[in-house]
Length: 248
Image (cartoon, rainbow, N blue to C red; front, top):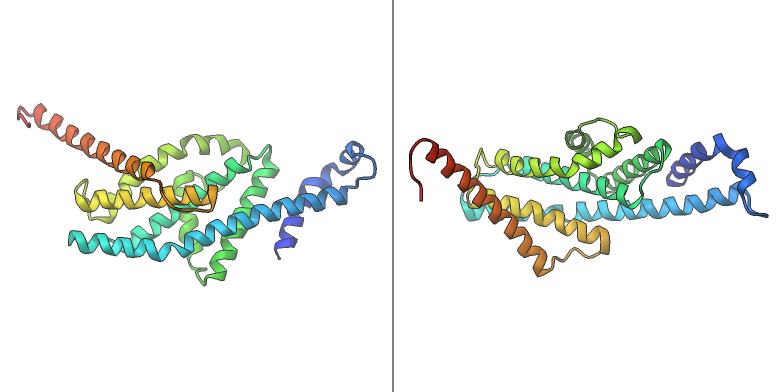
């Protein structure tokens, strides 16, 4: 099935321009040889994607344990199912964005190619792990990040440019929505740290095959959360100052 998919993608790209392409080939090389080489490249990309998605599935349980731990330590309820799904969607979206950086498309055909490779890898892994029911809500959640049901070459740059901004907006909202409306506090900040740590580990695994955080990376995450806390406190003080109340 994988070979048919990859070969099908290549045929769509090459058939329309086969004659012109043949004239540019070095002596003794055929279009079939080029196709076979491209198939090998795409299979490597597919393996990379499946390894990354397999990592996400395999670490889902550890993320769940951490959510339970936060709920136990704070003695405050968490919408665990929702938080688990939100983190999954965020991780998939980051992988999607990363893959387009690793394999930047030069035209619409290559956007379609990337999209099909990612979709096929996701379906393969979910099927392998018995989690086919994940597909619908993952794709629905992904559309919230992408702001479009389908990525194409024309809107790709727009997707890339607003991705970081959308994530920055969404992460605090996830913590807010999954904690019953808390804007701060130990539980809220612990969830922020879990989300940021999980994404940072994903980044390390995607790039190096190792998900261990360095001390510097862990400190940076805590620093960002601390700055967000100070920002919230500053906003609250400004509000009370506007009412004529002096808050030290």
